[in-house]
Structure formats: structure tokens, C-alpha cells
Image (cartoon, rainbow, N blue to C red):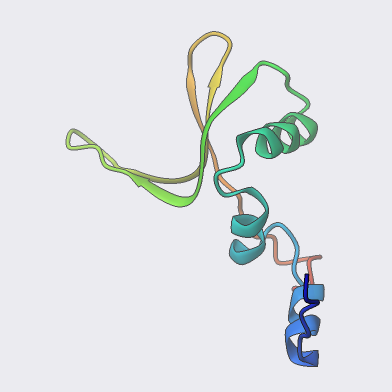
Length: 96
């Protein structure tokens, strides 16, 4: 397999990213239920959630009320649907 070469600007941009960046989140988790489930259970300290879908900014339309845009849709062991959003923090992750 041929090794790719990247310019310095690209490498610096990738180095400054964290999972709060939409691009990094999408690359790391979009569509990967197993990886996302591990992250969610680790961060939230909960083992009762099952990931239903992982879609960076997927829209769920509701004709009877507010629609939502979600990153992770999970279901608790009790059957409740839970919308988990990845929010950007403006401290750390290279942001000031």
C-alpha cells in the first residue's frame, strides 16, 4: 500500500482537532455503533444504553412538534429513546 503524503497545513489542522470537531467526530464515529457505544458508556458511566444509530447531524422530522438534529440515538434498557449530542467546548481542543 502506498503511503500518503500530506502538506504541513493539513497536518497542523488535524493535530489541533479533537472529537468535538464535526469533522473528527464524523470520521471517528459516524455509522460505527460499537465504537460509539464504548465512548458513550465510558463518558456517561452508564451501561444501560444501546446505540440505535450514529449520524453526524441527522435530522428527525416531527410533523406534530419540534424536529431534532441529533448525533447519536440511543435506547435505555427501560425503552426510552435518548438523543445524545456532541457539543463543541470552546476551551481545550485547540479553541480559546
